[in-house]
Length: 480
Image (cartoon, rainbow, N blue to C red):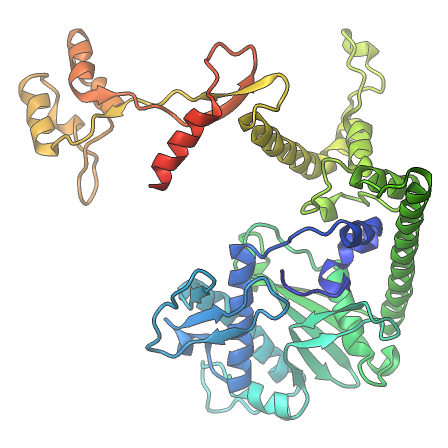
């Protein structure tokens, strides 16, 4: 598991909105390994840092491999392998190639950084002679002059030893502006810059470095680059500015949020101590969640967005209460008797919670299916899905084509797909071109219906339940 401060800046939105989540994780630890998407992002960050250090374009590393030497550990350590390096052997090796997709995205980000340096320091960086080329070498000079700071640890609240994070790129244009630029590689969730607590924490951490004071700069700006996302703004970059007064106000909010986490820890410690004294046993995770909720330390916040990756989502009293509050409508037989009415205002209040409710239901469905495979899900069972009819295996295309024309009288133009390399259309498609009286013969000769996969259905479904041994046999065949 990659190392994070207990109150890490990258997870500020989580503990800022739900202080109990930290106490729960400390008392009931769980593995949180980096997925492939996160690992790809780690490698993209490594490429950005290397290119800015050397003052070169990402394209100069095309085809190279970036390896995470110690994935899911406290020190992942990325390294860009030599040009002739082959894919490392070993199950622990995590590698990604610098391909066109990574090059395009990181180039977009780096071009923005270089453009801002030229814009903010016009007297220092003369771009004459570069033409349309981006003067990447500027980055090297900017680092030497302290105008560009690359990836580094920051702590928004130096008086505490449990806060902090890693800031990507900082442009220091003292005393006018400090700008923090953060790269996001994801394509699934668009990270919004407006009111972004993570970026505010990073910015605050840079502002108070050393003996720094928030009032040292006239303006603070944090920028997100997420060029791979289909809903990213033009150019892939978005930003928000804050005055020193606004950043100071955020600092006070952050201090209060940390204190709420401290009180949540104390609340859970007291609940555990009381349980030990009363019954001589450890507090369960269910009891811990309830104690934190009763004390007001578990919350879905304003939109439930921070709950998306929480392992407690479907058992959390706060999320259960929010689901009931949002969709708990009394549907009467007569529409006029519905209390409260399902009018436009009520619907408008429900719709913002659709992503949260959908996530809640998806997690529930996944867990239910896991239990159903173990035959532990009341009222449900696992059955085999019906397969789709398709061509029998080992058919020879030319032989099939000749048979269709000569015997079944199929129009040759209805047999092959119109493509650069023509292939047979699907069996059911061609079946429609076969004379109706010959379709049974056609199906018998050419088509078969393979067994489908598995799905969970209510117990009263007419299909026969699949035993665990049957499912295991299928999975073993696929693995082989």
